[in-house]
Amino acid sequence: MAGQRAKMLRAAAVALAGVLLLGIAAAGWAYVRLDGNITGVDIDGALGDDRPPRPRATSSASPSAAPPATGALNILVLGSDSRSGAGNKELGGGDSEGARSDTAMVVHLDAGRTGATVVSIPRDTLVARPACPLPNGEQSPAAHSAMFNTAYELGGPVCAVKTAEALTNVRMDHYVELDFTGFTRLVDALGGVTVTTEQDIDDAKSRLHLPAGTHHLDGTRALGLARTRHGISGGSDLARIELQQQLVRALLEQISATRLLTDPAALYRAADAITGSLTTDTGLDSLGELTALGRSLAGLSPDDVRTVTMPVLPAPSDPNRVVADQPDADALWASLR
Image 1 (cartoon, rainbow, N blue to C red):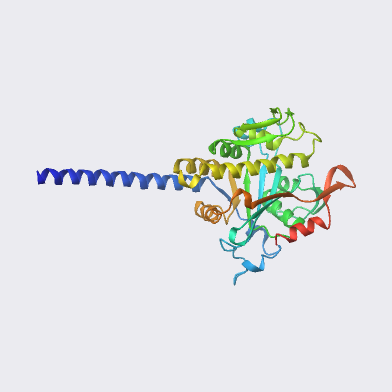
Image 2 (cartoon, rainbow, N blue to C red):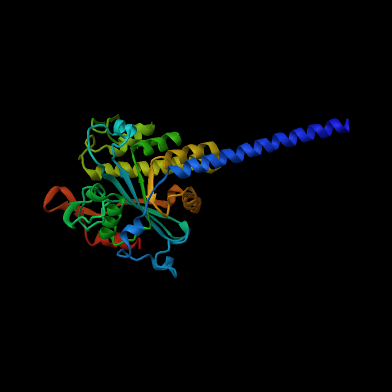
């Protein structure tokens, strides 16, 4: 009897070891897969030292060192309208060439992660676009009264960051870009988002048709809402930004309700959705770095996040464009330094 019990215990131990090894192998495979999904761009190397200074509270012996995990951070977040790839082309529709940053937000994380401010920059804002290093090694000329979203179209993430810093005089510690496919997959991985529209939306270009009221949207319809402009009163980029900010709040509520950190399967689906279509600076282009940032936000609730739009006025040169409303715009950016 004792010998049989010993054999059973050995068999159980072997089986347990096998399960643990499979679990470790699966975790390792998942990490490699997710880590390899991320595209990194060396923005610091491309821009050098000709940039706004880092906040004094996060300065260190090394001027180029990134702020610590709980220091104040400013992250430029762009939504790309690239039609590259079958998924993006199907979701975007039309025959647009190239890519633009039709959604631009500066996400400011307070020191200690006690709060966050999300500032939307209207894509139609006329700015002084600085000279930018281009992927082919050349330099683009500076331009006056250029639309903000042309910076990305001209020189990609590097030029987008440099133009945002020129506009705000705020150092962008990190850069994050998500395309159509990544956004829809993220929303679907979270189980959709619930939003309330105060008016009917009928926009052929974004392919969204919604009556006024409360709706639970899947990823494709949430993307349509984020892109809606012509189907709402005014048809302006500012009206679209209001919808985008509503979506940001809805996503934060859904992330909080989903409890990703306690559901490994849901966490993996969300991470796979995000990283598969994600471009970041080289300071965030690994799963470990993204995880560290995510952990630092664990205590932040949706109520701690404020959404605002950069104050703007109609441009004197073109009523269909806007310019920063001074001194209010500068005061807003100063609060994020």
